[in-house]
Structure formats: C-alpha cells, structure tokens
Length: 131
Image (cartoon, rainbow, N blue to C red; front, side, top):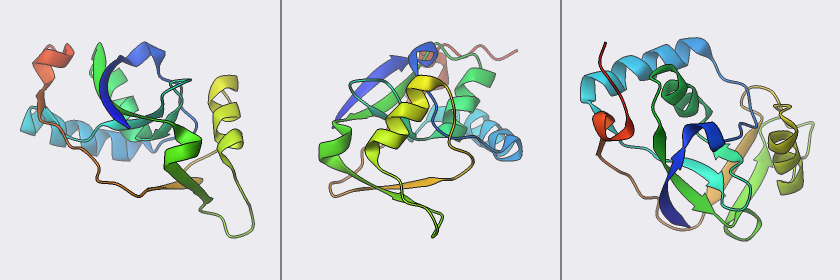
C-alpha cells in the first residue's frame, strides 16, 4: 500500500452511492477544511475499492486530485459480499470498475491487515475554491 494523490477523473467507481450521505460528507469536510480519509484504490487500474461517497464529494466540490491508498488489491486486501446470498471476488470488483457497471450500493466489504493511513490535506491544496 502506498499513499498517492490521484486525479479524480482517473478513478473508476465500483459501487453506487447515497446522495444524502454525500451531502452530509460535503458539509463535514467543508466545515473541517481538510481531507482526512484517503480513498482505497487498486494500484494497477485505479478502480475504487472503498470510498465511493468521498469520490462523489470530490466530484461535487470539483477537486482536481484526492488522497488515495493504492493497494496491490489481490495481495493486500480481502473482499467479502455484504449480501449473505452472494459471493464476490477481486475479479468481480475490478471488472465492474473497468466496465463502468457498478455492483450496487454497499455490495462489498474489504479488510486490510495493516494500519490505515489518514491524512490532513487542505481542501485548497486539492483544488477546492469556496464559492
């Protein structure tokens, strides 16, 4: 895993998001003025593994780039389906992101055995202009 800044336009979502949750995050992040939780992505494809609401927040605020934790997905993370009646694997998630066909809302859960990095990067440094 490595911490990188990635252009928002390069990120490929794999799940749907809740617009209400995005609005809540926008208010929180604008109030704080900082980006604290990097989005998790696959380092080879820029497919979003975790952080779909934060990705939509970045698009709404017209940020140019955002902090991401880039993982060697199959080696560093475990993936589970949140639906007891379905199974899901790394390939399913990557295919959904590359095809632009989201799996649905909150379909996957990922686990990382290490410590997750947090950030405190000013929104202005990420391209935010307070209108």
